[in-house]
Image (cartoon, rainbow, N blue to C red):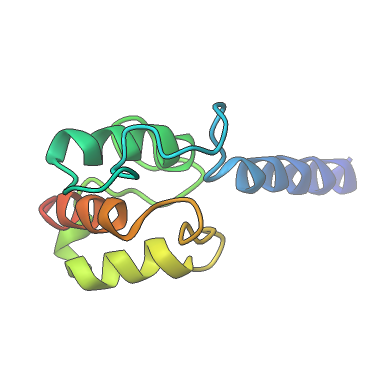
Amino acid sequence: MRKTAIIGSAVLLALALSACGKSKTPETNQGGTAGGGTATTADAQAIVKQNCTSCHGVNLEGGGGPKLSAIGSKYSKDQIAGIITNGKGAMPNFKSKLSESDISAVSDWLAAKK
């Protein structure tokens, strides 16, 4: 019985972690600034909605990933950008999925959440 519960928990954890960062849409830069220009707050929110909410929750309340609703009180914009770019722990990197402009916009937006 206990062995089954442990295996079941491990399977659920693996499924939750594999879902992080995966979008249901094809890997394109929708809502981003692939064509150039500067990303806005609306762009940042769209990027977060498309790429982050599966793990961090629709309201950034956490879930499979940590809570981000007050992440700006823990990390600076540059630290957040580094985590998005390179990944950290179970979080995958997004350097090949998001442009530098998109990462900067999302980092700015998240850093303001205190």
